[in-house]
Image 1 (tube, rainbow, N blue to C red):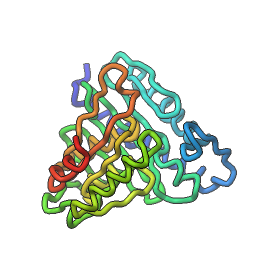
Image 2 (spheres, rainbow, N blue to C red):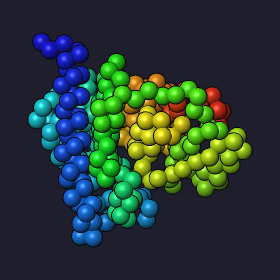
Image 3 (cartoon, rainbow, N blue to C red):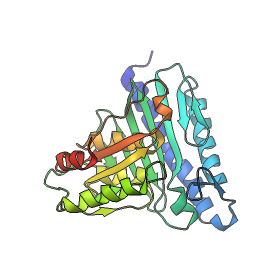
Image 4 (cartoon, rainbow, N blue to C red):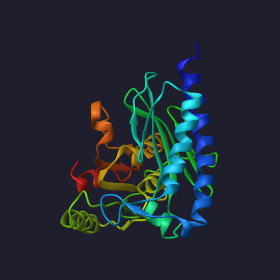
Length: 265
């Protein structure tokens, strides 16, 4: 029987290959996005297209072929329970709004959970041809180059990513921004929480905070950040919590205390 390590290795190789394959399909749709029929979900800002669904179906099919007993949670088609102890958590296109509006800030996000924690995190940004990849105990890389976070980077000398959606009130978001600015920080929002989490792992952002986020948006980023030497606030995936949203905070070591205070976590 394959060892636990080789099981992880095989899935890690698969996740990277799928991210690239799925990204190629998504990029083809992006380059002819004027042909897409755009639908809305919760509100007019929450959009989806056939590209999201086709990319998720592709990844689901590849996982089912290689690891038929694994669980799978995708943004578009929900949770399928497995029996292997491994669960794939996938956002086929994170940043659909930038995607359909012709901006490059979107990505394919693929995570694998085992024992309630993310043990694989792969994020591929097709417009930039950047592959972020991490597995438990194996470190994190960007296009094969090892990532290691610098503790000298703080909210005062770096930029923090923030996210917001209609699950939280405008007043809450406004207070979040106000608190960050009053603490001496600054912020950016690019429309893709998963990609901004990858930027935290790469040291481009010193942290990322979003008051309400789903597992498919953040699990891959969590693995990347942990393996690059950063911190993320625990996200409960027990029971049906895996399909529910929660606050997301992830930081480099030099911003942890300040951002925990600002987020009130």
